[in-house]
Image (tube, rainbow, N blue to C red):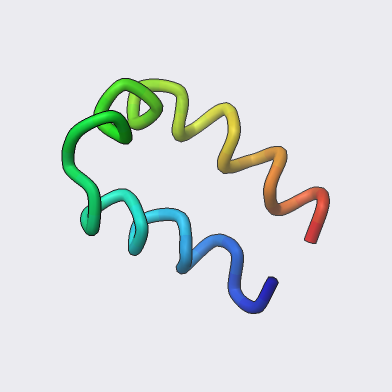
Length: 37
């Protein structure tokens, strides 16, 4: 994926619902995403 870090906040704002729950774990999953990238 291109710019995983930028995509994270993007899709987060797109679906402000079920994502809200994941938003709390965003810092955790976000860091893992960067590693995978």
